[in-house]
Length: 423
Image (cartoon, rainbow, N blue to C red; front, top):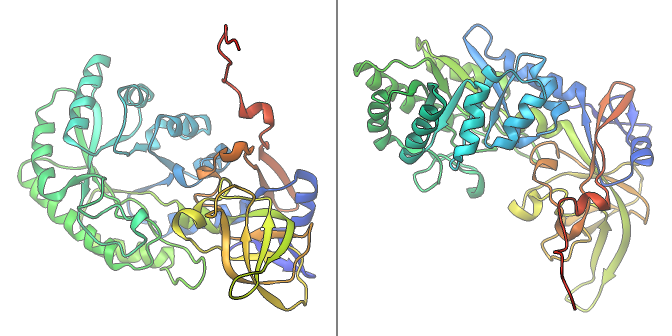
């Protein structure tokens, strides 16, 4: 459930008309609902009540510090994959002992930052990374808390680009090789083995892949215990999907109940890394129609609605062919037409929807691209030298800008023309 709804044919976010926000802050514009963010976080977290657990929000899904702070104030942690995300999480007030660090390419500098901050755990993804963690920890004179991200070779039945748990994916250490790395880590003086981690993919709509992965991890934990290696944490990753169109993902409580039943008497503290399931439906991207046109000359006329949001603002449709519902901010009774909804960027792949049925719209009308909270702004760029959009958080009957719109000077910050350049 989310708090975007129509009232008298006008789209509202909570108690604020979206048109009023766009009129004041311009477009393109990300609009977040605090009530939705709070509701979704609590719905997910409360499903694991009664067992030791920590909900570490996946920063990559939505990295605005206002959003991270909201979750931190409700007991959440952060799942990070870069030094920049560590910086954001700490700036947002996430306690270091609630931060876990995954990712296949951690640099020595990033590992130093994480160890100096005192984060909960580093999820190691390769033998060479283990060696680097040991080296960096020794240089700093600390003991590094680690888990290994084990790749269980489970098919998540999702888009190939967001599948992360198959043997052919770049993530983690194959389950057939991980045991030897645990034994090796135990002998290292600056390594403390704390847990095991896995993440099989994003936008999963079935429970079976999660349970299959968990069963493999449980068997692996028992094998480790036989060698005297006891684990404190079991990090199951994230991946629970949301409804963009006609998907029917499990409710977070259904997911939690299935996980708890499969855990049985396992005593590890559970770590979860939800992202999309919390923020996906908690935001929209508001955009203004710039032009409409009809191209003729093919088999049939092609209608285009050209908007001021582009693939640099929301890349999922271009990157994955992902579906987002798109609705006029003001409802009309006009008959729908088949159109391509496209942006101004110089790429044929710059589209938000193709062959979509949309009520007749005119220049200056506002559209809302729904379910844009996950991997929306966080994947945006400055391609075509386009300033990135503003972000707004609605709180009941008021709203606040939580990220200002970029300006043209922002685009060239840090750039210089070399001295002595002549004709």
